[in-house]
Amino acid sequence: MSTATFPAGTYNFDRPSGGLTRRGRLARTLLVLSLSVVLGAGFAMKAGAGDAVASGNGALSAAKINGSSDVAGSADKSYIVVTVASGETLWSLASAMADGGDVQALVAEIASANSLDSADLTAGQKLRIPVK
Image 1 (spheres, rainbow, N blue to C red):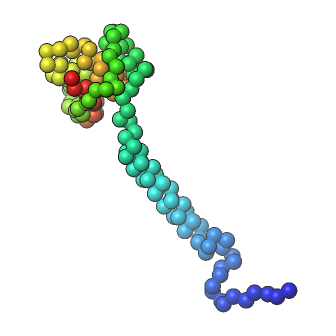
Image 2 (image 1 turned 30 degrees about the vertical axis):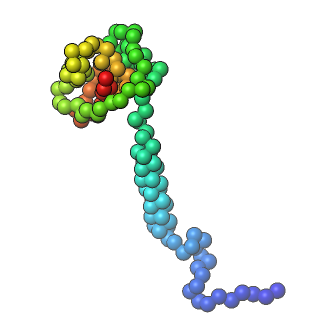
């Protein structure tokens, strides 16, 4: 049986992970994990995660908020995006956008389109408002 000879310093058989120390392996692992998170978030944003129009349960929660049982389907509507200012309510946004129409129905549509479980809004929150 023959033996292999390697030049000195070429291979480090004491470290099975390619010559990395414990700190190096940790740094490599953290780098791979952080790149995975960034790529995953990028793909999620590109795919439009969170932009889908709610149907079914979203319509039920909108009806529960407003006490109405008639919620129109919103699969074929277009939307504008509004950023909620401090002190604004769902009703004030709907009354500003209703153009003399039924404010309560618009509140229900906004709640349905944004999958809101309650009428509580926070400043800076982005809402999709259906355009008629």
